[in-house]
Image (spheres, rainbow, N blue to C red):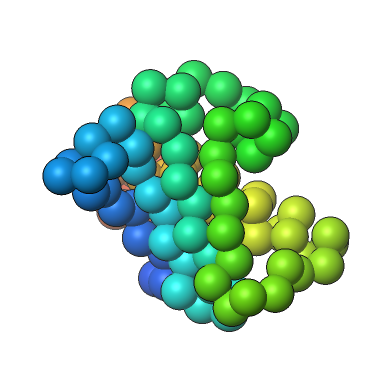
Length: 99
């Protein structure tokens, strides 16, 4: 089942000006804009992604506390994992695999 708080997250592209990038836009407070190279973003782990691959901008003009920022980045990572998961149909339909 998809967590309700992901309603305010969007995965976006701008193929005219930034064809090699993807963006996560978080519209709920504190809103954030995360840009990353598509080729690097999906082949890394959480720490490397946010330390050297992703460019994180807070749209409200104020960086959150360290604890709040870690929570936001964790949610962004979870969102990307759900969107890009090869088994994302399981999330979208709330299916449970039977093995």
